[in-house]
Amino acid sequence: MRTGVADLPLHDGRCPTWLFPRMVKLSKLVSQIIIEEYGKNEFLRRLSDPLFFQAFGCLVGFDFHSSGLTTTLTGALKEAKLEEFGISVLGGKGKASRKVPQEIESLSEKFSLSTKEIEKLKYASRMSAKVDSVAVQDGYTLYHHAFIVTEDGKWSVIQQGMNLENNYARRYHWLSEKVVSFVNEPHLAICCDVTGKTLNMVAKENEEVRKASVDLVNDNPEHLKKYFVSYARSTNLFKYLHMSSQHHIELKNYETLIKVHEIQPKKFEELLAIKGVGVKTVRALALCSELIFGTEISWRDPVKFSFAHGGKDGYPYRIKTRQYDKTIQILSDAIRNAQLNNREKLEAIRRLSNLFS
Image 1: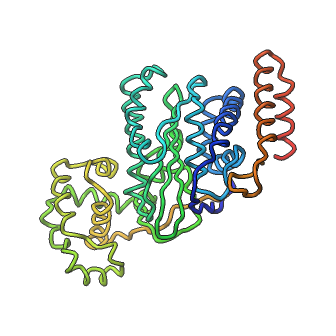
Image 2 (image 1 turned 135 degrees about the vertical axis):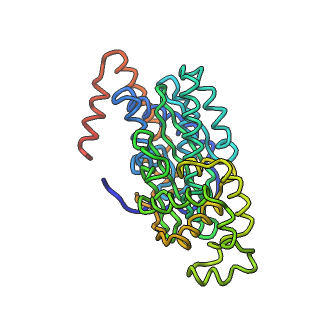
Image 3 (image 1 turned 90 degrees about the horizontal axis):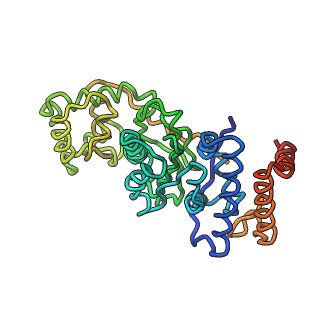
């Protein structure tokens, strides 16, 4: 599989009003062809592939190097209302991301999913967001969470975080059929142009740190209290651990450990899922495990990946609306003819794609 780096600087402005309705139409046509030709699960796999997702965004006219491609493409797919093809796109940017649990509840009627299946989907949405905001501490704050579900309960997550210091975004891809564990290498891909020191608690190298963290919270918290210090007294600890002030173990995090101790989680996933366990609690446990047990922490940044019609800001060139509308018409005709058992145009598009494969 091709890998590399995605350059996603944050762009000002919004998607033009003349472009977005066209994006909705074209993205729906492309989605329909893929779903009808290859199936719902294959469509989910393709959306989860960062290279396909990036190419899809470029095809419908968004800037190839803009972080806005993520939010705008998923927004267009949501507006396209793919439920008629057995796909539902939930969530989105900002406030829309927090509506995912309620939107998942509505799937019980749309897709006839059982209560158990609905609860599993809600858990998957919540845990994928918590992993990328708490367990992967890379400096990127999540602001976009799209949850794509098939009528048989398969799912994909495409979420994005922003780093205000370097003005870059980072995109996280998840695919249900590839998730064996939420806390051990669960991502299909993570894309960004900037890498750095990251407390990656879902790295396979941190398995012992995860186990040690669970042991620490299940033991008597009094044994850990001496390792928790006030911010003002933490300088010596920084020097001992050769870390910056952002890696200190604050006394207020100790109170959270007392609450977690009462629950007695059996696995790190259960620990992470507890309400109130956030960035500082997870970091404190990792540092305590290194301090007490000597378990070496992995700071490996999990970034893996990089990356037709122009873009809205003229990159690589300006969109020609007449050509864009012609593409929509060609695909519409191809689908309509295919439904009438005349697949000549659809097969021609397939043969054309072979020239560039």
